[in-house]
Structures are given as C-alpha cells and as structure tokens.
Length: 546
Image 1: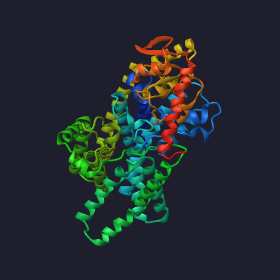
Image 2: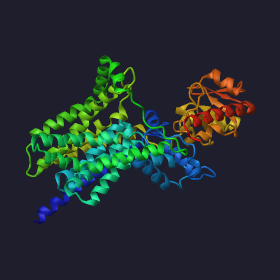
Image 3: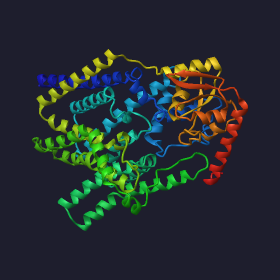
Image 4: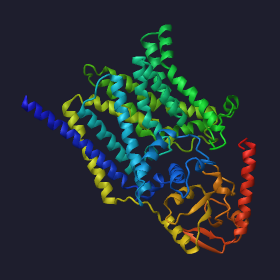
C-alpha cells in the first residue's frame, strides 16, 4: 500500500510539473510579442486597443469623469461588455500603479487569463456532461495540452484573435461555461439554474450576437439527434422546448435592451450590419463566389478540420472504459461546433448578402468556433487515451518536449515587454521638435499613438477624404477647438484634401518613409473644426440624437 501511495504521489507530481511547465512556456511565448513586429501589430493594433482608449478616457486623463467622458463615444457593433470589457478593466486597474509597461502587462495578462478561462471552461463542461469528476492527473494533462496549443498559436502567429479583447475571443472563452450551466439546468430544473442560464445568455448575447448561433446550433443539433434516434414523441419535444425557455428569454431580453441602448443619446451603439432582403440576396447569389469562400474557409482551417474529423473517428474506435460512454455527447457537440456551425455561417452570409460581392475576404475571428471545436474534441480524445496509463505518460512527455522546444525557440529569438515601435518613437521625436499635440491620422495610427506615445500625442481618426470616422471614436474629439491641428500623417488620408483643410505644411518629415506634415495655421484648423461641428450636428439631427 505504501508503494502504491508513493507511486500515485509521483504520478500526480509528474503531471503537475507538466502543467506548470506548460503555463511557464505559454507566458514566455507571450514575451515574443514585444520583439516580433507581426505579433506586436496583432496584439497592439487599433482594434485591440479600443478598451485601452476607453479606460484612458474614463480614468487616466486629467479631469476624467466616468460619465462625462463616455458622452459622445461611438462603440463597436458588438458591445463586448462581458467578458471582454469587465476583464480588461479589472486587469488594467491591477496594474494602475505602474508607470511603465502597464498597458503591455494588461494585454498579455488578458491573453493568459482568457486562454486559461477557456481551457477550464472545457473541463467544466466535460464534467457536467459526463457527470463525473476529471482526475487531477487528467486535468493537468488537459491543461498541458492547452498550453502547448497556445504556444504553437503564438509562435506560428495563428488565430491570435482568441487572445485579444474585442475580437470575439470572449465568446469562445465563455461558451463552454454557458453550455455547462445549461446542461446543469436541464438536469435540475431548479429556479436558481433557470435564473443563472437566463442571466448568462442575456449577458453574453447582449455583449456579442455571435454567441447565439455558437450556443444554440450545437445543442439544438444534439437534442434533434436525441429525439430522432431515442424518443420521437410530443412529450419529448415539449420537454426540450421547456428546457430552452430560459435561453430564449435571455435572448429576447438582450435584444430589447440592445435596441434601448441603440436609441440613447449618450453613447452611440451602431448595431450590426443590416442584411439584404432574402429575395434580393437569392437573386444576386453567385455560386462562383460561394465556392471561392468555401474553399478559402477550408484552406485557412484545413488542419483544424482534418484533426476534428480524425479525432472523432479515433474516438469511435478507441476501447470504451465503463462509464465513459457519456463522452460521446460532448464529442458530437464539438463536432457540430467545428464543422456544421462554420458552414451555417457561410451560407447565412451569402443568403443575406453580408459577405460582399467577392465572398469572404477574411476568416479568422468570425470562425473561431473551428478552433474551439478542435480543442474540445482533442481534449476528449486525450481523456479517452489517458485510460491507458502508459499512453497518458507518453502524452505528458510529448507535450512537455513540445513546450520545452517552444521555450527554447522563444528565448533564442529574444523576449521583451515594452512596446515602443520605431514609428511611434519617430513621431515622438518630431512632436518634441515641433511642439505637436493634436493631429490628423487614419484608423490604424490613432489608438496606438494615443496609448503608447510618450509625448501624449492625440491624433484624431479620419477617413481617406477627411470625413469623420465615428466608430471607436468620441465625437467630442472632432469638435475641440483647442489644441489646434498641428500635424497630419499622410498615410490613409488624401494629401490634397489635407492641404485644402489645414493649409500648406511649414515642414515635411518622414517616419518609415511616410510623410508627416507640420502645420502652423490655427485659423485653418479652427475652420476645419467648425466644419466638423456642422457635420456632427447634421448627423445627430438625422439620427434623432439631440
């Protein structure tokens, strides 16, 4: 007995070490972000810095006021309230006392937290569906596998949206938790679980509309299969309908609240893209574009798709340990999520004309369910294989070797924390030389400069023809008369219109071969701002926002 106890202790220690090694390796791989330009551009681009600018305006600017500073903000179509916004604000507040690297630590810790939250969500779901506790060793092995996949994604610069705020990655992180609590409600029918499910669905679907098909299609598919092959009766359909009542209550409530938010005069919530009428969309359907997008979808995700199908087939042939039949249900769940849901999205986009004339141009974050489907069914496969003790140790050893290689690769290429790209450093030098404060720039410059400039530069976000860009900006920025516009980055804006609105530049400088104009005509700047005020007044009147 003492020998067996000692063996079990060593067993648990081995898998604990592999999980800790995986976590350390994942954190080290995040250290590549600051020194790898491609990773840095993904982690710290304008889209991913939206919450950073919101936090800066609400809490860090001189005279910031939580309510007043929000007035006039233009949000994103997806609200991203939870978990993205809450999680980001909480982490940024933790690093509030740091003078340097606070933004970088917030972003990187957000990435680590969201990935860990996603992995534990899968474990939570599997425990609910199988109705058995996953052992300590198997949990450690699953986490090791998850960290190993995370390292691969970062080092190969793939699907980075899953680590970032405001990229629909929060949907993936909360989905398995929502499924788990829904299954708990299905078994208990308690008031507490009813309220919990309705509340979660309300919050998540309000935050991101993509949550609804992610959540509904796989579980509806499971219930349909169950009804077709087990119990085809009216009573069973009634029971299923009752089970989904808190889900539909949460969805309907979220849509009502969303419409109320859209009509408010304080913060501008643009809403989602309006689909074409179905008759018009079908009439303009082009099979060539559809098959192009379908092939592009498969090409971009072929590894995941093949592995999902391969793992599912392997699960069918693996010997079943007594009590492990319950793993079939989550396997089908992740199969539907990874294979069926993306195809439904693709067809929906074409039917309602949301993909553009040439079909889908970019996949990544809108089809993140494929990645989650791969992770989920891969973890199920690992749990089944781990019933063989030798195989469990082999997997642990292989994952550990992969993680060690990832650590070596990250360390050998260099690690860093502070993000201060040469372009922003160049702009800061020019700002000090010419006493810049406020300028004109295009979307991809504005938020990185506002967050990472050491000279507190405040460029405003304009479209190519210098029309106002409302999305992710505050209308009050465009209406300010002071400080005047003193520079313009001629990349993504029309040079002729810039000269027309702000006058001839008194000097032309260059950062990474991009021309930067310096202006010294406050009268021209004031006239330009007055034009902005007129455009905003017309827009407010046309949208009944006075």
